[in-house]
Amino acid sequence: MLDSETLSLRDQGLPIIAIIGRPNVGKSTLFNRLIRKRRAITDAMPGVTRDPIPEKWLLGNHPVLLVDSGGVKLDQEGLDFLVTKKSLGLLQIADAIVMLMDCTEITAEDEMLIKTLRPYTDKTIIAVNKVDDPVRDDLVWDYHKFGYPRVVGISSAHGLGIDVLEENLLEMLDMVEMEEAPEEVHRVNIAVLGKPNTGKSTLTNLFTGQDTSIVSEIPGTTRDVIMGEFSYKGTPYTVLDTAGIRRKSKVDEDVEYYSVNRAIKTIDDADVILLMIDVTTGLVEQDKKIAQLIVRRGKGVVLVFNKTDLLSGVGNELEAIKDRARFLFPILSFAPIVSISAKEGLDVDKLLDCVWSVWRQLNKRIETAQLNNYLKEWSDAYQPPRGTRGHFKVYYGTQVSAPPVRFLFFVNRKKDFPQGYIQYLKNCIRRDLGFTQIPVEVELKERRRNTPNTRL
Image (cartoon, rainbow, N blue to C red):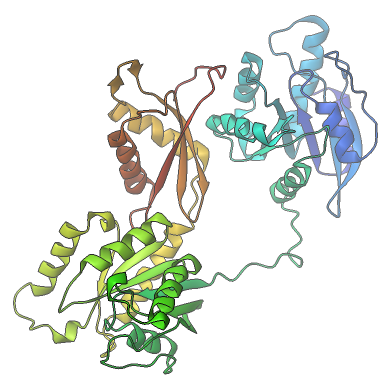
């Protein structure tokens, strides 16, 4: 049951933000930093703050009630118990909770508090304090394993990361000023790549509805990167048509060499690459080199088999060509294949639907809690193998970027970690988390020894 003092905080009619944490993690320092004045007493001695201290505060342009609380000691009695009871009472009435932690260690008290706040995950931010040195940035990752969707690193003493904390609070309280941050219209950037004379310019002109690229049977007609724009199903697209990429041994002119370099750099400017292949000749070794460039940069790629109008139509000729491509180029095993005729305009809508599907996967994010629930299932189904120094272990993971889609897993020993198990994790991520059509990168980080030995 809540005491009258805690209940009275509601009477002010303002959103309530509560700062919660064990003693001496810097709650009062953070409180003073946010309200920009010294209201709460700060001291190295734990337990200086006992009663909740409320203060009206302007978050962005919105008035809120910020409350500093006494240090939580879940296993104490007497006065400490009363302080803890008052602090935990704030959880029920708070609209947002800042759970403050110390980056230098995760204590048993921290883990008990994290477990206690589990029912309030949706309105809680874990703020990892004392990240006052770039070297300590990595320590923040240790807190992602607990499955809270919002984790930020800050330094209350030096004001570092406070802006990020405030942005998270604004989002959580749904106070983002929409007139200042209108919904972004997502533009999909496509690059059309491939060896010369595979129909890149014909497809580009079909997309844009105009002759932006010169179309000719003479290989190498396009010397530069041609940009065009169009819209499909309400989504704006930019398409980049490039010079055909050849082997360097076949590049004789300086201008041709320059064009090839520009085409390679275009990969960095695109979201999804359309790798054009003449269905009458199939994939060649140079296509594999392009594919390696694309995969290394974490870009989406669609294999576009063009000129299907030239096939005989006898038997399963096209399927045989696709099967051969899969066999010869395992690096592109994830890439969707679409067969078209750019000249006749056949199945181009199917191609664009595929591009949109790939783009959505590239920009997909998985919450840490969801990832680690799956990680437990994957580990139960197939444990990491045993090495000379015992079993390899995967403790927890988090998605660190999109795009490119990258996952970071914390392990007991990074050196000599089995490549086969890394590939297993990639396969599981694609299969269970919806990344079936794009490259997925998995990185490992060795966890510090003084971190609690909790294994997912």
